[in-house]
Image (cartoon, rainbow, N blue to C red):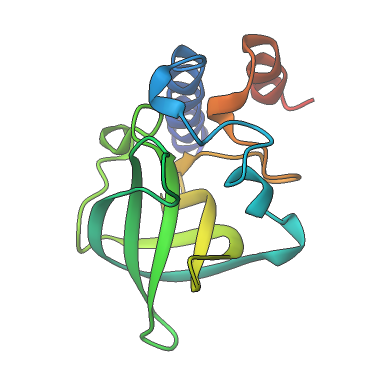
Length: 159
């Protein structure tokens, strides 16, 4: 059990360190804290669902934004195809969790309407009990790619 917990911690740690390396990256245009896209995230709209990854795709949520990574996930319960926004391409590392089409995942995020369509802005995508891609703080949705090294260190320490 300890080994499993340490593996999960290691995956999350690597993702946080990877996000820190991308702070200030020009590939974050439009994804910055307080920007039009960021203001759409409302923690009161948080939700989660399980489903199958049908597609991993490049997204541009709003005009002028740097490319991002998204998923199309078929909700296990109602079979609806949901669009999931993970984050900017320069800050999202799917290789870290070996995510691929056909994988079963649990998506945690907040619903938003963009260009007349409902999407879920991801907080995290869990592939298994000990493997997850976390892209935002759970408590307020602050994106990891916008954090300073100090904020990331505090997030890692669980404070």
